[in-house]
Length: 165
Image (cartoon, rainbow, N blue to C red):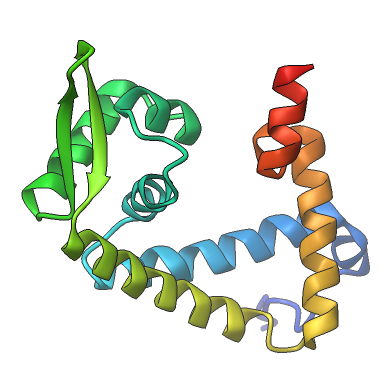
């Protein structure tokens, strides 16, 4: 009786497909990142929010929701959790009581540093087959593709130039 066993390698057509490769690699690294962030008591959303707030690009709840493409109600729940854990502070805007500004606390800065270390380690492990120059080249190519599809990936100076023009 013959048993169906999975192939020992990917079919050449799938190996040639950049869509398949990017999808498979993306799922693999995302799964590892999600698992390790959750093991550290956080989510990828937590990391996104903490990073945006730390960089000062998005100081208000609405700007954070827009940048992460989250429903504002979903963001409020995330912010509530981060605030309960003492990682962020929300303050009413004195000029517009409907708006809240968001800032990292000292604990929030420490947790963000920890999350960055986790993600850096994952990145180093995932891209271990590539040397530094190859990693930089791959990164630049991915950024080029990302910018083509989503203008939010533009460098800050480029983003300002396109909004001012």
